[in-house]
Image (cartoon, rainbow, N blue to C red):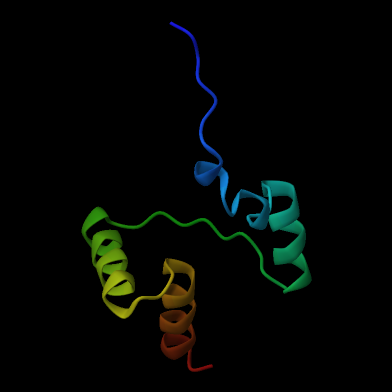
Length: 72
């Protein structure tokens, strides 16, 4: 079979999303640091569900909850 080139509409907005290297640079400029943790599966599912319910990113939700829990 001949491979067809995908229509332009599939690539719309692709130029707006930074690649990984650019995203890491942007994160560093904002003072963000990767911080991996291991959580119980049920807790992780609750966090994802709460983030979806609030329409927030998981990063933003965890940031908010940690700041509240740590008092700052």
